[in-house]
Image (cartoon, rainbow, N blue to C red; front, side, top):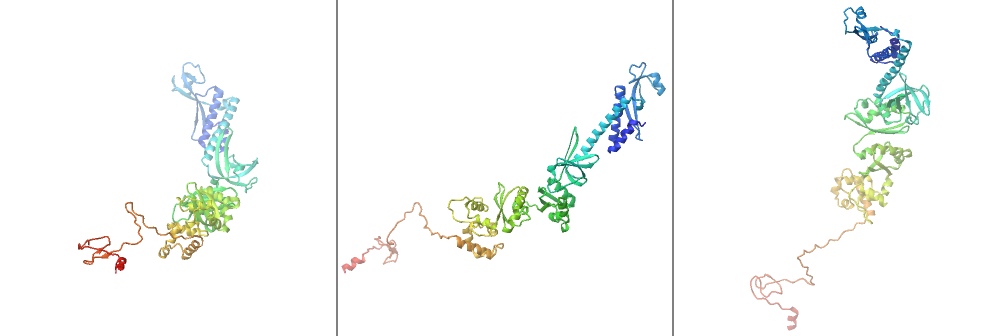
Length: 494
């Protein structure tokens, strides 16, 4: 039968929005608490529910010949009045009317029920909200204390929106609708704690998932997000399908999707670009909206890079108070130095900068004191794009360039004749070409160099014509005897 206690509990549970199973469990615990308070024990109490959701309370008693414990025992005569087939030793369920309980028993049962309902509700809500961590939720501004905003999330649940998790450019008032990220959910003896955030990058990610279906269904992936809340967010995206442009999907037709995100972030600047596994291209993309001329890797191990921009792009690349390049550093996990084209050229003049610039192209290069220009990158005023193009053709040294024929240069389709000639003109202006004299080949260890003022004369044999020299007395070919006379002496004799 339905009791006043069960009806009160059912009403309480209905107001709390609890599940039916939890409601029945709460009613059972409440009736058992009242039974125990009245009889001193609940070991033999039984609670049952009908299909019509009515509740009944029973006492399980053993049929005995002589009753010593009236709470747990019943004599055979009284048992047979309830069930004529009863026998000694059997168990009999005897219905108990909670209305017969004392007022104190009912009061304690209600206290137990209220506490049980709160515990069950706390556990239920904790499980519900814990499963939603990282998701968006909508609530309403209710009150504020010490800069923290308390948001009504429904179901008599309140979320805390800490001051440090609020964007500095956003302002809320009582009854304002607030969309936030469920950042953290916990519980303790004081209750359920739900922390909200509009500060973390996960909030931006959740907004993009809401506005961009391709991100929600994983067609477009987010590689990484970095943000300074209220000022600028950088988002690197990629596509899992060749026919889907990840940046275009995020921007949307006529920028509709990105504008919806910007509006939610109260006008915060957002840079969306394609992720690239090549660090040079990734760095170039990360410095958007600035246009980058070229990127050089200074030290791959230490993740140090140099970006070259035109003069009018320098402030845009660095950003206000260095914010753009700082976010780019965090996004690509590299230390990026930004220089203008003029500053980059001057790097060849300053020794330390010259060494760093040269190392861009040759990891084995070691600076030597007083060393003259030997590489194309050291040429003052050389276009870095052209220098890099020559390097890709394995032309690093000035000597290599000068050794190229016109036919060789014509094969470099990515370098125009005008660019080639400009490099040649710079070399002629700044580099002194010294032609090395050919050295005579060294003599072998077993050879002896003989110096003589005059070369030894060779004559012909008067008999056979074989070659002979003045030190011979017999022709080596015909065997005729030889005799040589000095012309000066012969003339004197004559």
